[in-house]
Length: 320
Image (tube, rainbow, N blue to C red; front, top):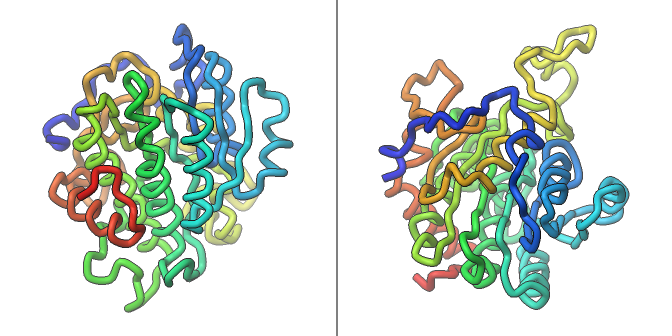
């Protein structure tokens, strides 16, 4: 179903829209939002927009002291500790959220690691897959009762145009047969897209809808594992430090996620990949990094990955 739904709806917004613009006129008073990665880059602007619309926002953070400092000027925000690469940390936070909130209305899973050196965590999981996908998979499954208790909860799973780099390595999820940092990142972002597809299928009976979101290219701390030379070689900025004009500002980068989380234009929809504040087209041209690859919204692959992820983490809100 997801592939058939992958067509723009004419939202009226675009690549240059900001989070403040897409949320203008929307009242989130009484709503609870959880935003991972919500204390830097586009995550910080996401929190600013949601809190500005009246939501109570929880920001899980691996560095809570830093997060509290960055978020000090925004009212209605609290910081909780979370390391997405550590399943025990995920379980502790999830239990605390279920204790403290009867319902959670929005989850924006924005935290990520990109192009890191080969690193193993937990039982030997590859870091990018473990953090970007498995950490969020376990968190959202564990707090699912609070999402189901909401009226029309939405879960936003941050993917990336990086998903064009790799489908799921079904026979070598941990990339033990040859690690490449960009293949690892691409796989993790395909996984976050597929997660949104299957979560939407499973959750819509409870009114829980899910969307995969590509925020656009933004220079943020996500690039911390890349050298200056690598970024120049990729054309992200030149020798003088002038940033490629295709890059968005953090305010623009936050817009698609905030739009997907709050817009009434998406009522009754879900399980789709969004970019530039609209639903994206399917793109089967490997030379063009735009739109969504068919494999990243394939329902059969989404179900297969869900079963694997539930087995790895030991968590499945739907008891399969």
